[in-house]
Length: 103
Image (tube, rainbow, N blue to C red; front, side, top):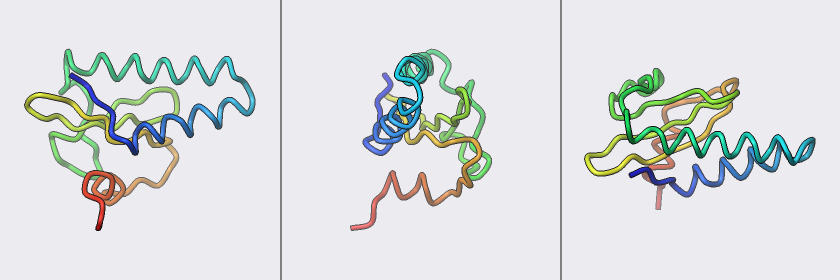
């Protein structure tokens, strides 16, 4: 089973809204492709590459269009952690902060 974290849902909404500024059609197309790809992860969760900045075999990614779909493999579920633009300067703390927010 694949579930989306709240930060990942927010990332998807932001991507959709950004693309929709130019094309509502392509915004829907990209968002649907990302969701479709996320649903396919449960069949082969280890097919994605290990996120190089993190190095944890449980945290992996797929590239979809210009975005990195980052997810974590758990025994009973897969959680989508984030969608990050491929050109963004991604650091380990981004995912760590999303998983374990400071109180």
